[in-house]
Length: 338
Image (cartoon, rainbow, N blue to C red; front, side):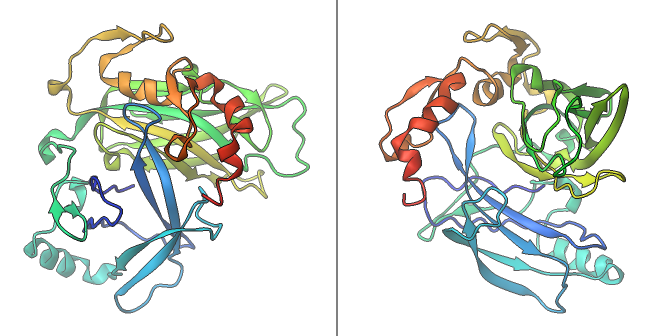
């Protein structure tokens, strides 16, 4: 996962973000998500649109073009939501060393430094520096990480026995392990409770986060799907929330598993107060550096606005009541037209 800096106060951003990653030797795709600062919480972003670029056919030249964004969270429904211009350059492994030397000579960042490097933002009229401060590369190894498991879809195949089975998501990240509440096993599940958020004050950003969809039935436990994420690409000081595809294990066929996760990365611990606070809304004790993420993602009693507040909805209430409101909200019915 790579993320650009924030382009403030513009509808025509220019990021000039350069990302480098390996293309696996199998069918895959590159998913681009355009996010916006949100009124949903103190550190929350919302999805404006997505584009999915197939990488199974590798051209022998640079590719630079405009790609339409979709309002569908999986990037598959072609409902126009703006466009994004992307330049792709494929480099064979045999020529990688030569390419990396030329790239460094042009001022590019070493690939292991994540968001540090040439990363400017702006609009068509002027360029502006990133609004989120980024620590030096040598300070990014140890940081704090917040994670919340929100929901899942495509978790069970049609006709698969599910009557007495339960499922949850387990994870491990070095010394940190945890699991969500177990839910009755079905294709779509919703977690997102306060018990499904995890606080990790000290994380080695070089480690991979591994998640497993675990199914429990008649005393047996099986891993139905899994995934691994590089946590060093998450932004500092703001919530990143998105869907992530999982790979399936043998015996769990016809699945298309995806989980929706929320992440929040703090600055290195020498800049963060090491103390606990009590949420004034729900009363939960949590590390102080994750308070903004907790309010934005999982606090059931934190008061938020309707997602359609920008177009006129005046509802304001606890996050716990948002789902019931959206069902009745007149602007939800007009969402596609808006």
